[in-house]
Image (tube, rainbow, N blue to C red; front, top):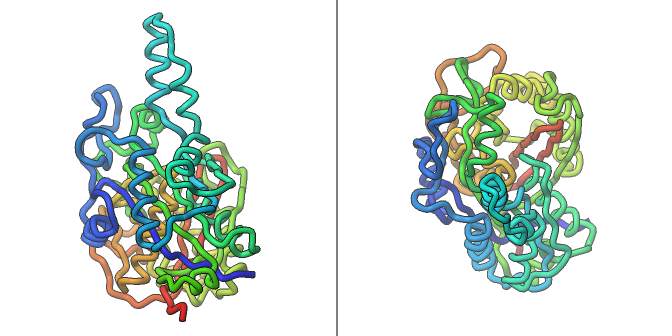
Length: 387
């Protein structure tokens, strides 16, 4: 089995484009939420999201910049590398189609065709002359995590030397309205993961691309490692269409599978980037999952939710949070959980409230969960010399 290293990444959030903007936003603990500006939110319960300022970008546009940054950081052109991306497609085309239909105008079908999820990896693959397969992962909030896991798998078994993987999501009215009608969004301008008084999640713009390589391939071309993908685990508990398993069964299974694949004991994990949506049901379930994985140590291992500053980036969230976790390992600084009010007995975790915490950590766990009982986990390692 081949060791998998991260030799490049590029990222976009409401804080802006690039790693520096992300670091300044995440570690400051200052959330990016503001009143929604892209559409009229007055008809909805929720009013807030973490949007990139100005005109709404497309998923393709933001991912293009992320891939460009990731390849430049990696010092390669990506030729022949498979491209694996988490996405739900371009909802703007869907909205235009149905708006035309409602006004009895002739809908333009080609726009819907180009909105299909598969178009994003194909467009990125063509533009950067990447290889195949070119796959879209569409399993909601674990999509980008799955893309990274599959990319790492291809490298580990020798099917690829290098892979470009990640995901993208841009706040849009279509999904905003769905989450709002389901009462998943908070009416506050903050989300409060693991805190008493939490009321729900908020969406956020996000995209990230990572260049994964086998350590041998990276070493041959004198590349720099920004960390390692040591292990990955996927699990489905199929408990409910939208609610997590109340005992966190699937998330715990995914985490344990990732640890086994990495050959790492739970005691060796120094930080967890939690799924941490700030909803009444998710956070207690995730806290129990952590108890299943860490035992009595579950209350002392640092566990923060970076969604408290970026918002929930849906199909992109796993890729952005993987980059954040790698930055935490590199910088020796654990990102905080913003919006915390007071401890909730159902969420007995050290959520690094309010302020970033200096800590030298060599291995971390990044967790994500999705509607339908899908769960995913990554074990990430700190950068090491490839010499």
